[in-house]
Length: 182
Image 1 (tube, rainbow, N blue to C red):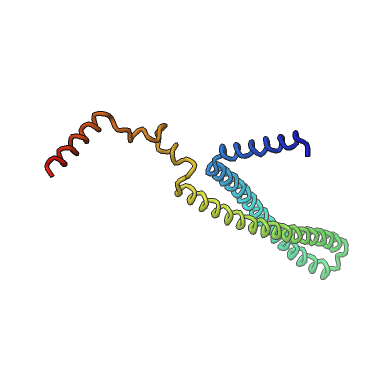
Image 2 (cartoon, one colour):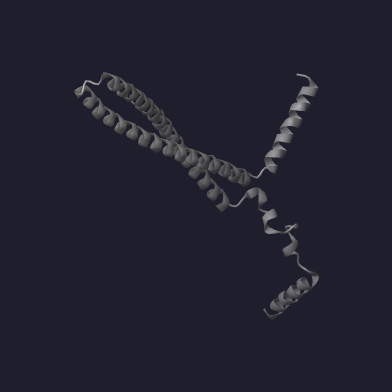
């Protein structure tokens, strides 16, 4: 291995370490939670759209089936009256309606499959989102060791503990008085 490769690898490793210390894990986790919530919201909207589409297909299929039943009654009447021309026309309409119903049933089946998969995915995402939120609450509750000195607002860790000469003199005099009396 050449020296340049080794130096380059060492430089990259140091840069990654610097970036790791600069990144705020709590902020990254909050952003991940926001992204997950946005994705879950999008899929919830998509689920509502699919549910509405399913509802519309069901209503249309029911209407088509009602029309088929009405056509069947008219067909019975045409056969009773031996009106072949009108019976053929009604039969064509019934066949078209049956094809529409068949298409709507297939479409409903596909939509139900997609909706089921979407609901499963949303359930998993909601579970992962709750886990991430729990991690964030735990992370927020724990003190951060890498910020212990910076969080107290003091630049100099010894700033509040410095003893002045006057305080030292008063303490010296008190100690001398205690020792003289004993």
